[in-house]
Image 1 (cartoon, rainbow, N blue to C red):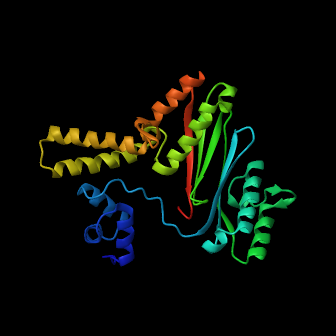
Image 2: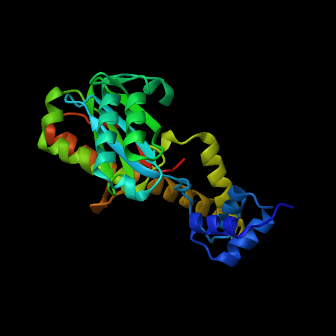
Image 3: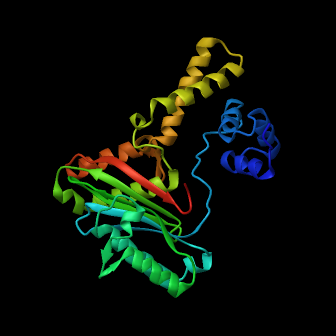
Length: 290
């Protein structure tokens, strides 16, 4: 049997918010399998859905930039070795330059991105210069570039560069992008993604495997209650409904007005501007997260 280390117990506790003793017991029962231990705690009614965002392992900054026409946007993570450097203006300036290069050119991955150029310098050259100037190992760990044809993209950076979000919107009228109502909506939805960490835009965005897995847990939890089977089924269905409300972006309660969900907010703005606005995708980077 695999060893149940203190660090493994701590990680499970951080993921679920459950007490140390219950976490250790679950890990023993799951033979040190972290994901199985999470499922066991959920089946036992001790933990909600664990949003396994990943453990922070690096310092640095997440940066975003949107093109002037609002149709192209990038999200970049640049890592350094220390928190001191991450808060340094010189490092911040290098990150801005690297981010601007990401908007200008397309690329397949981080290695390809290092060949992108801005002001006569490649990103690889900028990184080399930054390392020589600052004296720390500095690397681009992630970069994405998104484009839309009919619509716009919004961005949001939280926590001084520790969290970044892009949200892609689709609509028909070009003037919608410049309306005050849409600009407010675009910012609000990006902040929602940052704060509430949804798993998909709509419930249809979750794979069948994920939903089947959730239902297995809900049914096991309901069975443990000892209630009649027809009641157990209703309990499981109710839990799945709650899962969608907590994890589907358009069904999430709006953080600025919990009496409405995001879908209702989008519909209201669509009516206000006389257009049909749709959230089509989002990206969310947490610093040092997998």
